[in-house]
Image (cartoon, rainbow, N blue to C red; front, side):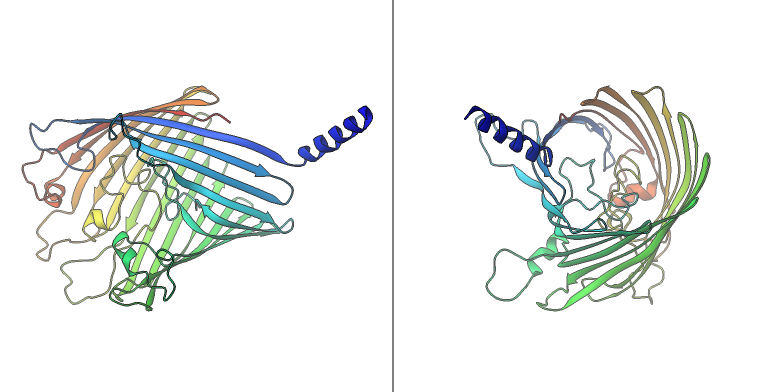
Length: 412
């Protein structure tokens, strides 16, 4: 009996070695001091101070054929709930499985984060305490150093018995269908990545009519020792939710110099927009950055993260300089400088200056230990009279600033 027990023990132990179980967690409180964050302050206005927190717990299973993950999270502002209240607030951040069909092809299904390239078009928007997630299907295929990823999603309201009417979601600007293809290939020092994204939106005041906004383009990067040149170019076409023709584009050239602890990036974003003085043109010319991150691209004060809404559909020109310096293995610092200008006129009279603002972001990150990191930052924005008019308040000040201190604890 004793030998039988030992035999069964080793059999079960060897079986467990073929599978991996893990638990990961995150607690991320963030203090913010706001005096002009996302909105210009008025003279004598008091600053806002608050602490938000994200709490997350993830369960993982993995073997030779299957990956399974469930991640629950709670996001809140300290004090928004009464100390005697118990309001349900835990939601599903991720809940998916991946099945490996063979060495080159696998399928993922469920609730997941779509994160691609530099996260300009598809991102989990990790800066926000509540991440952006999708319910869908993801196919991955690799052969001869070519990597293909294709995602698909279909959304529905509730649990209906008839029709697939999704009009109630239009107020949330949510898609009914989503399809995308990302391709990656390295050719020596050259990296290329074509992309195609199609979003199907139910046309307003209809039940079955779906219009597709489509985005096609590429990322190409040429690297040589310490230097690299990157170009991202996208063209947007199709129709919007009103059935209007779309003709918009996005350009982002960038040069980077990387030497040991120092990284310098110089570039510019051009996001096309409508010209209010061209009253005969009825097409949509404002480019949408879809479901990408804005916080890391258009200034940390988030004045121009929701394109095209934040620029009155007139587009945006954003030249920038970014510096990063690694002081040591645990401490690093950064500085970003942005110059914001409208790409087109937002008034029919064309009387306002296109210049919007200049922003400078400073910050550091300190890895206290493997599981704990501390980040802090300070941002300053100098606004123009044009930006003041965006908020319909000429009495606002030209200067705005914002600071934060965030602790991230991620045990596994």
